[in-house]
Amino acid sequence: MVYGRGSAVRGIIHQYWSSVAAIVISLFGWLLALRGLVLMAAPDLYERAAIPMDAIPLIRLIFGVLVVIGLYLTYVGWLAKPASPEHANDSERWRAF
Image (cartoon, rainbow, N blue to C red; front, side):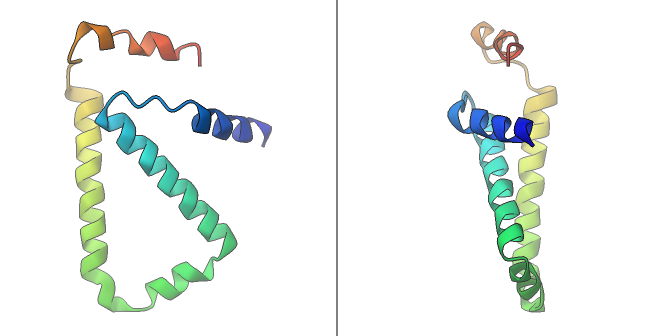
């Protein structure tokens, strides 16, 4: 529990947005944190949102966007080469954290 709070504080204070991928990952993490808070505070909101079946095209669109984001992050994380030598040592910087 203490480690989790410390990680959250460190994440809030120490945002390192050096690329589009870093921004996407941070925003996704914040959205998941907000979703978790909503689930704890008002769990019935998700039940009420799931009842109307008219929202299926919207849900498909949302999941389609998530798939595109996932493919982009996969490409950036596994296949893309560093753009310049100055970014090649970014992993060294994060070993201390």
